[in-house]
Length: 314
Length: 286
Ligand SMILES: Cc1cc2nc3c(=O)[nH]c(=O)nc-3n(C[C@H](O)[C@H](O)[C@H](O)COP(=O)(O)OP(=O)(O)OC[C@H]3O[C@@H](n4cnc5c(N)ncnc54)[C@H](O)[C@@H]3O)c2cc1C
Ligand SMILES: Cc1cc2nc3c(=O)[nH]c(=O)nc-3n(C[C@H](O)[C@H](O)[C@H](O)COP(=O)(O)O)c2cc1C
Ligand code: FES
Image (cartoon, rainbow over all chains, first blue to last red; front, side):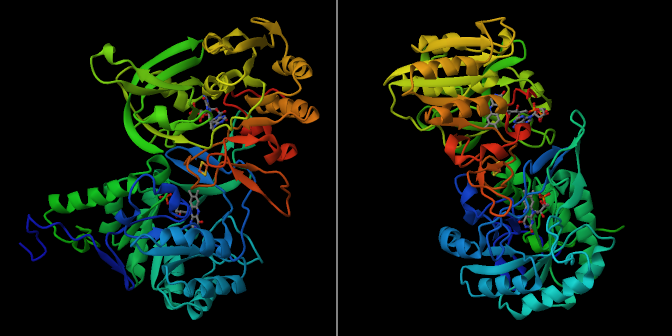
């Protein structure tokens, strides 16, 4: 029996640490699928979460894409919301006061339309005491600005991370896109440029056709695929990134239940995010937290950290 | 607003392709307002993944003497079978479980008016029943109900039982008068120019209703549909174009949270697309 084996009277420890950010459990929402928290507050106490990740913010409000913006696909969905958000001003004025009543750390996801904008938003977020960490989205498939696609070119990615790092005095999580040939190249580039943690993956670019009308099913043409359909791809990429870098990795993509979350933890993710599953079941996340606790008991582990990276390769 | 696992009390075919489902829903009688909707998870598995939105047709109590237990609150939905989700729904029986999220959305604003005119197209009739139940307390209520054929005309006698005057029209004349529901509306508006109008149905119908009401300066509320993922304002997938919307200064309204009921002048009608905003009748008429 190793030291990690559990004393049956004690609650297993679910707390994890991400780059100095203390989470009481490894479960948090994926950006863009949980609004600004308030939308899901009627369904459970948000303090049950490890962290609260907010909808992607930009400097100015952003209107988003034409409709239809979403389509359902087999075990998944496509979206091209186009990063509609209230902008940083309104976020501070209208959204943060609500989040302040919770003890759970708030992680602000953000993006820019240019290098300058990335820097400016980072600077503004850096000043906010209610924001515990930031998540830099360089991966949205729906923004094409200035000819640079930050998320798919390692040099551009390093440049934006370096700049944001300079403007920021909080843990910096960089969220990667799966729409690249080798995600480990991107992961190493952002780690070197100063990322404290890596979050992967964002949505996979996809397309769906309405065969009756012979039209594309979302107005933007392409959209981001999310939900259970992408989980095996996400697990593979998280596994690869964990091998490639030293910073903690947050796994996201198609998690609907504790068992799905465990796949990510076992291949080495330090925490997980739940996205599309929130739409399917607004109580998915608290159920996952309970499920992780039960798994620890069943496996006679007193600490979830013993499960992280515990994949047996032979 | 709550999310819970519950039980189906009954599921009956009303007319070919249309069903009425009664679901146990504690708390709904006090909570649900006319014009609100629910999201139903039709399968416990991953197919189909997303919940399906349905208007609340009515709420009520199942009398205690049915089984000797305390009164049970229920919610009723009426649905048309159009695809995978509604096909699963129609196969469910009394005692089967479903997950229900609701009541959602804003609901109708009850406008004081001597003449209240409700316009329903096909399954768009659904949110009007609870509205009629409230409006009959304070004025004359008329229901103009349109459909392609007699099968599309639902639950009209239930409105009559409330004391609502009903006028039925069908495209093929198989029930009521032959023609469009908007022809009937035009006549009623000529007669009752002080009316308030409430409408739900396919987008082309709503557009025609809007034009008639705008011309007569009659206040109009419409209940819209949009493809929804979350139903609670989190995904921003269900937006429609608000008044003043333009390419350079976009203005989107969230159908699930700021709607599904809108005052007609909140919307940019020229830019509402028939394709995704119409009623779940699945009709393509231009
Ligand atoms: C607020 C709201 C209230 C609604 N109330 C009712 C109601 O009371 N009764 C009722 O029968 N239907 C209602 N609908 C429409 C209903 O949600 C759809 O018919 C249903 O989701 C179709 O599911 P499906 O899996 O059977 O169809 P799918 O397999 O998903 O699709 C089949 C066909 O239906 C069309 N469709 C799918 N979803 C929608 C939608 N949301 N709106 C319009 N067309 C759609 C698709 O374009 C497709 O052609 C409402 C929709 C909304 C947004
Ligand atoms: C409707 C929707 C909106 C999203 N918006 C954002 C966003 O603003 N910023 C971001 O970094 N990711 C965004 N994402 C991606 C999710 O955070 C997540 O990476 C992805 O959905 C995969 O996880 P899932 O399969 O659990 O949904 C969005 C996803 C969806 C479905
Ligand atoms: S359906 Fe998600 S915001 Fe309306």
